[in-house]
Length: 404
Ligand code: GLV
Ligand code: MN
Ligand code: MN
View 1: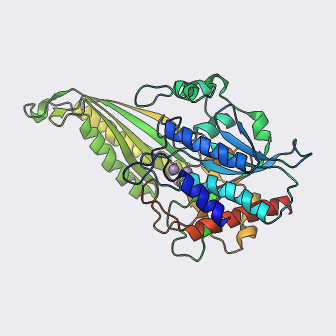
View 2: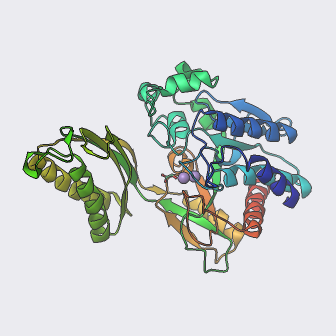
View 3: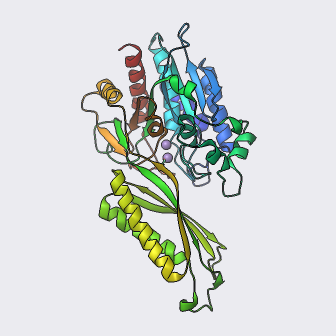
């Protein structure tokens, strides 16, 4: 297990790396293709049967003779990243799943039900705006026509990007047959917080995911000269962005949630020009839907007021919304039994494919300790020993499922 972790981790370390040490592995780019090729090779090396499903997700099946019709215990995560993301978010779950297969073999565990490793496509939504595209399409919560029409910053549609990567975008959509092959799904992931940092536990068990979503403000004003246009004569959409940034913070503090403006596109983006148009993306998350709604309404009202005062045209569009998820209580109980009764239960504000699949199959998560809690950043880190503990835990969980 130790050596296979080191080998697999070092194989992917250079793929899609940016000069600041982070990763740019956006869906359906060459870096993503290299990650996917790496996975196919690593899975085949282990004797797994690799398939690409109709939504571009990768599946590596380990099926004992005579059990092909039975549903599998599925492990896995994703291989794409946010801009300058860390090494662990996604790949740790995939590498750990492959290592868990090695570990089960090393333990001499006789397979008597199918096991699979899944790589979900486009989890971060960094390129086309919607997160968890592969799992949303597969489960039928994302309309295939809407998915095909999503575009990246260069105007390339998701359909064309998938076609260029060899996936038939006409076939996207709910995959009932594949969903029936999932007996349970456990996603191992680096923790994206500090709940385990000061604990004695290298691995925690997920309890649920906060409801969360992404919204886009489109703000249209009037381009003008920064050095000559009097303040009263301006129609400056950037003032509405400033309002959105600060109100997001205020509303999050007031209601106990999280709200962030992390992406802004400014036109024409001139240092000496008042912008004509700005798009600003709001990411908001909260412990429950009512709180999330309150946060969003508070921000929208404030930006709307500012927009009418500044004579800026403002529209707000929801780009994705993920309801609250509670992971399957039975599976969670079994994970805790495997890891030890005192194992911490963690809920998270981060989205995961496990959260999407939770509505269709018993789903759970394991979190590996992150000493700083930092994620979506080149500084994201987990100790090697904790990663190995995660792999051991995953193998224990599969073994307990095979031999209850
Ligand atoms: C995915 O990592 C998300 O929570 O946005
Ligand atoms: Mn992420
Ligand atoms: Mn992730």
